[in-house]
Image 1 (cartoon, helix red, strand yellow):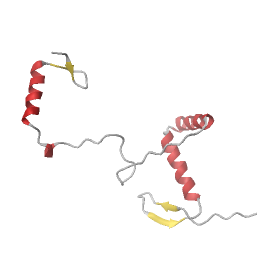
Image 2 (cartoon, rainbow, N blue to C red):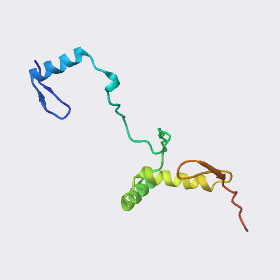
Image 3 (cartoon, one colour):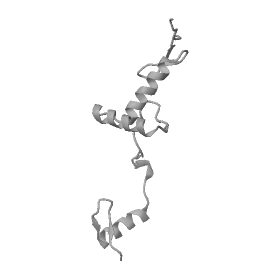
Image 4 (cartoon, rainbow, N blue to C red):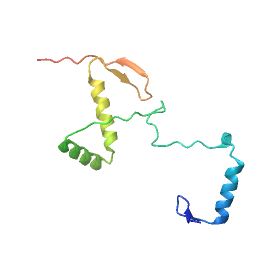
Length: 113
C-alpha cells in the first residue's frame, strides 16, 4: 500500500485508512454535514462580491502598490474607495449608504467660470 497522508501531512496507518473506508461505506448523513464556504468572504450583505478586473499601466500599478504599502491597505480596498468616490461624484449617480440602501441621486456638478 502506498503511503497516504492527510492534508496537514500526518501519515495515515492501514488501520486509519480501513476505519475511514468503513465509515464511508456506511454512508454519511448529509443533513448533519457542515457547509464549507469556498473563497473569500463577501464584502456586503448580498452574499456575493463580483470580481472586476482592470488593466493599468506600469507606473500607475507601481504607484498604487506603494500607496497601499504605505497606508497598510490592500490595492483592492484603495480601488474600491476610488471607484465609489468617482461614481458618487458623477451627475445623476445613485449614492449608496453604508448598508447599501438606495438613497437620493447625486445633484449635478455645475462649473463656474
